[in-house]
Length: 146
Image (cartoon, rainbow, N blue to C red; front, side):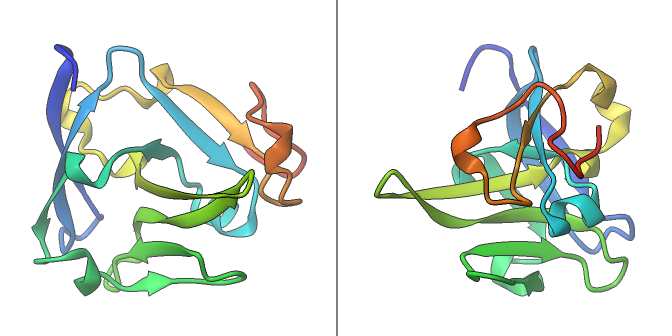
């Protein structure tokens, strides 16, 4: 945590999922991916450590429905009432090592607390072709969106 870290609130559209998260948004950065799930949910990912998140409702992440596909190594958590994708995470292998990841969908942050999504520097991943080794790009890969 830095001196610029603040606690922000967020949740799904209907309010069934509510959370608070400690973030430093002094230089906001997020990522987008062109894989089918990220594209269709228009996910804007903020990578965080799970300790930065406090789930207000429901009681635990395991109470939030998840969707998995492909390798089933990622857990896409969403509200089963309004359909909003809120969290994601899991693990993947990079250069022979297991990497754990967790993210909050930035568009689920409550907007009345000074969050301006237009100011986020966005990096883009090529998940559509599993082109992770290409690295992050400053613009969308083929099939992606801004």
